[in-house]
Amino acid sequence: MKLASRLDSISPFQVMAILEKARALQAQGHDVIHLEVGEPDFATPPAIVEAGRQALAQGDTFYTAAQGLPELRQAIAGFYASRHGVELDPARIIVTPGASGALQIALALLVDEDSEVVMADPTYPCNRHFVSLLGGVPRAVEVGPESRYQLTAAQLDAAWNERTAAAMVASPANPTGTLLGASELAELAEVCRRRGGALIVDEIYHGLTYGVDAPSVLQVADEALVINSFSKYFQMTGWRLGWLVVPPQLVEPAIRLAQNLFLCPPAPAQRAALAAFQPETLALLEERRAEFGRRRDFLLEALPSLGWRIPVQPEGAFYVYADVSAVTDDSFGYCQRLLDEVHVAITPGADFGAYHAERHVRVAYTTGIDRLAEAVRRMVRAG
Image 1 (cartoon, helix red, strand yellow):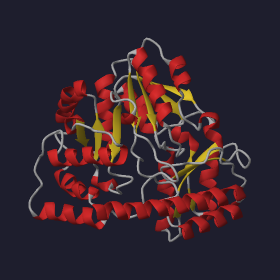
Image 2: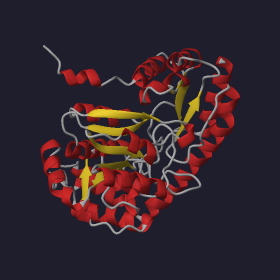
Image 3: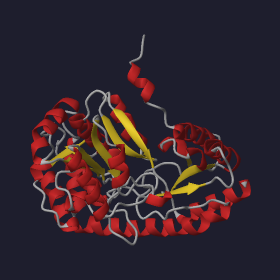
């Protein structure tokens, strides 16, 4: 049996080797502190769970429209109005099986064989892998602390060529937690507009910011494609629900793709998500956001004691991207050693790209401050 050649472009997550070993250590009775997984540790809010339970009890388990429930798309549009002051036609919203489903549709709309999509290095690895899966070419642009690990309009313009179909950015970004301001988003959109391409913005960590709000690209560029999710801020990771916002001319082809790729998003999850926008749910989520902020502040103060450097303060998501070159020139080996010796699991930089990957790690503050403090104590011991 011969595998398709596209698999050559899909690299494995190094963190999976870390996670597999961490689980094996736990099975042996060791206390492992997980700082590698990008998943909120809070349970899905009770009102959402109850809405999902009611949907199941009522037999609401059949296919919905491929685009998603009209009332859920209306609720999402209302959220843009209340949070960002953006009047969004619900017809432009495609509800998807997770943000990954939204990413697949967005790229399938734009990427032809050998098309290029410009993105930052470092970035979330599935961004480049989905481009490769479609026969396109991810064009990684090296970004560092000087631009807060974000792609700039000047870099995008310089990287653009006749094969470029789109640019993709994230705000807040994974793994760095940095944001793009409204003016920066507008400048990126202008490059794409002038060059005849599309701008895709990953906003799945919207809502999880600390001391500053993340603007939506739709405030400055109505034609952008926006990917979002119920997983992070709304803490519905396992429910597998996200959405995609497209410009009006892409609605019909996006629905056509959704019909063929997924049939529809999961019906019980859609019913549950309607409760995500209730005032009591939003109040609880804001309390949890404040807790994430306290965890971030703790790590920003504590991690330099390890000899690590944090070049840019993260303003969103729940990650710290740290330069560990003062203690190692092999971040993967360093992560393996921390797990073996003191049972702390963190993610090596190589999962997010190639640019100085060997000198960076990502720490997810998806556990309580007491556990974060214990993780730091253990890592200090490991040296």
